[in-house]
Image (tube, rainbow, N blue to C red; front, side, top):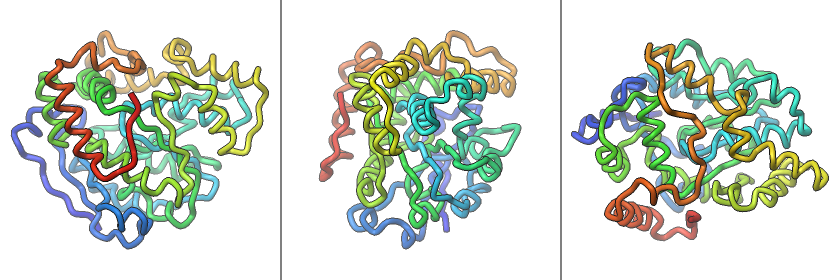
Length: 328
């Protein structure tokens, strides 16, 4: 069902991180159960993961999917946590009390977390299997590696996209502080451009879901729209879930989801992930918040004009022939 090959190039080795170890490319061999529209127009993307993921690949592929599932899908650092909290509250009648009492990682489970992180003290796939319905499931896997029942059961799917230049800078800081990456930013950028960073490549990941958005009734949102016009995004999410809230309720939800409130919300800012990483590594994670800046255009503060130009060319090459465009 799956083919894998080690990533042993110099740049792949240069960006190896201790929290997940070496990486491999994973390809799905049989595309017959995927939506025909994606296999007609493009070859579904592979994914950079870890050797230990192969022990869980079939479990995830064969996972039982329910019609009332809610799947939050994204490439890392593209507004995932923000989207999870928004979607959970909209679909749960703005239940702020439960949201404050139950951590977001329990309300919206990261399916493959235990499958790629070394020495993870649990089984997040089992956690999803045993979760009460309706389940909220967060996932960074590309379309080809998702459970095959998704394409026949058709649960709700929400995809959040973000401009790759900002996502790359955010992912670098994530890699350095949470994955324990000790290399240079230059090596990390080279690995991004060579599609050799964990969960990559980003753009084909996004394009696969864009291609099936109509057929699979995917709610496709952009990080940049959430920053610039959250009220409009909230109305789209409400419509998707058949929910109706007053303007005052939406304004309250918008305040709850503002960056300054979210980054200080211990139930939703993934501070428990920092604690887990510190426990596994035995080291204090200094000067880092999971929700770091949340800005549009933040790459201008950290990337040289040369790398911005190279990333622009990288994006343009990957988007050739597609009607999808990332937002600035």
